[in-house]
Length: 540
Image 1 (spheres, rainbow, N blue to C red):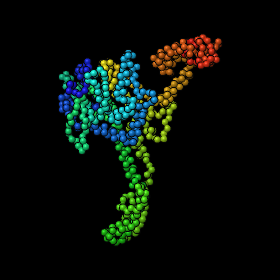
Image 2: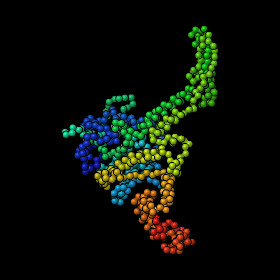
Image 3: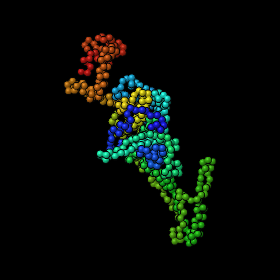
């Protein structure tokens, strides 16, 4: 690893040594898109442009060209608008450490470092562009820049790298077990290779078996995330746009064919049958041309000058037809060739538009420009919208690897945690994204209203057929932590006169202001009604 550019985080246990202690007959399948080569092969310094390296670069270029098409761009915007929500005075994403068994001080340090990572990414300003870049390309690379003389100060800069200029290489060695005769694959070394010119052939070079020299970079110096979608051979990382390549090509071809058909069949043309009698062929053709020039008078409007002029040009398929007719036929005749009768039908184009949206997991109902968005009641939400929401959640979970990788390197560099400690809590670290406030409030209100309606219907049976604890867990869906928290808040509010409900001498609630405990104040300002007089009157 000494010949690699960048820095390396020293670990107590070498991953390669740990792997040798746990032999397996099947090689590990990873979704990082690394090129697997034999240890000590020609890939030590050079990367062949043939094969997966060139293919991935071409795929990224293809995905970016696809994202420029209006239909794909519109579908991508729908996905990005759902995944990245920007609200006033709300953070786009926050770290959630509630499921980790860490002290409050460590949680505060991790939260602070996560904010530093967001600042390095400029995520608050460029969240939309970062997510779109990852979604379209299917992969993303960031170069971690630190002060090698003071690594404890953490990351100084995170610089984006074009994925067409960087590739991950994994050197492996294979050995056969003497007892089972099973070939075992072990990873010897992993690194990245960077080339400024990119891993693709130049214009005009097709299939040239050339190799370029690249810079070998230590894996700790790169933050690398992928879409998690692999080709059938599990070798090339694909973008979520990959399955839309065929529908997009079909849509483009059909639209072009539709335009050509409409242009060629839109005008109504005339067919001139000219009687040429017994004239020889040469004379007949000359006579036909003379007739064409005599009757052809094309009116042309010049948009630059506003003038109308007569322009005589050669015949085209969009204009009239002139056909000779020999002696013995019906003589000179002029007929009409009707125009296309189905020029207004676009059902086939709309079908492929719908197919394109479905390939991108976007509900096809969003194609309707005048379709209103219905919200408020949960039964009004379509099944496609629910599936789309779950797809967005999966995208967010995959995109979280960017935060996890960058945060891990930041914590290890600053000696806040060790590599072993991070492995224990990594699966419990979550990220909360900002959601649309209005629709979330509508959903929460609907759910709460349904629960309270069910609770009101169960009131006569509580304490007889259903216990209070069962109702709180299965009707209100409160967790043990929420039940404990609510009980503590209720006890605290019972001791606070601001939340005590006043009663008269007969024990009936009084609509009025607050008063000291044990006294009623029916005419005072403020009014009570937020609690109960005694704990025995709460839920029984």
